[in-house]
Image 1 (cartoon, one colour):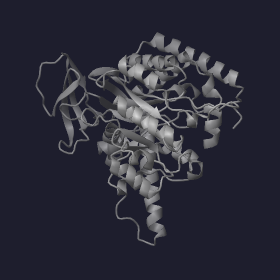
Image 2: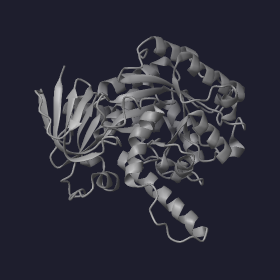
Image 3: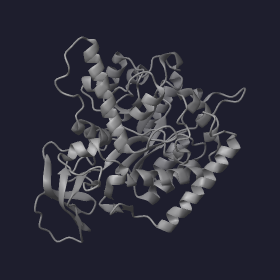
Image 4: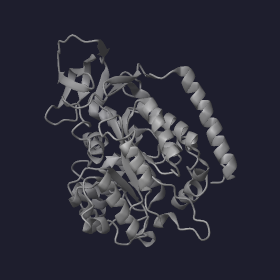
Length: 457
């Protein structure tokens, strides 16, 4: 069993029982953290010098449509309806299984390089099992930890066809994966059901999909990003709640338009909520639900969502989620006629918790991930504290949340295996160059077939 020692780092454990250390070692045995303390003496196979580095738990991106990576920033001028019309109604219908592979591969490598060790890969362009297998091929190749969310495509219905809102999730595909390559819940890549949810499907489909996930023992996740007038099932999450199907095994994404009573129902059920502040501010008039979750005693998780519209740097997502909630709280206090706030809401440590513990909780992995606690998985990130945008580091958590970006990530370990070292991914340079060429061919064909003009918006 491989033994690795991370030596002399400024360690932010995100474990309140352990706290932080200015000069600390971490002993890794196999895929687990064995010890976190100064001055560890042990026989090891490798020593990683963490002097002048901030050491944090691996970040957890709890919502990412990784298959869309090759269309990066193409939708920077899109509205919400534009996204559904152009992406799901046109561009997404042109993808083939190998297009999913290349987008997922480079997207997962990008997340790894940027300090994200776990993603919820919410894959919702699947029209045959081949799409799922090629996406999983890519995840496994990168070495990232991933929950593969098997979703379904949302094309515009042809005349005489049922719209996607009326079609149950294809159980047979999930069962094939569950009984086959993703049968284990302990692997680096595990399975989840990326279902439509009540805002995007009729009540019969809501019940079918929630029961299916329950029957298969799977985490499920659904989008909740429509204005109430557009909800397909106006009862919303009260439908699975009344059926006893809403619990900690479900993850709600966005939730901006959900009223306080329904949000409280979701929280009290144990379900998690993922905020994607960059996207939500981009296309929605209602605020991200971070503050409302905090008032209910719940912890958000964070996600990037859609790279065609959003910045994919997870440090940026943390910062934006923190700053936007601060702005909301300060405006609320001001409009109520109160004095300036005595303390800024959402301190940096809290948003770092959303990006680690919150993500682990949303994925049902808090016992394994989210903090640098002995016994948990060795998913660890080292940030270069000598970088010009980081130096000098006075308080490591402040510097991590308020200053760092993906380029500052020096070293990444997943399951105790080094996936980035000295600022460079452990991935063959020649192969990466070929994969970039493949991505360009892939997206050029997709755009050409779609007839989409990139300067259209």
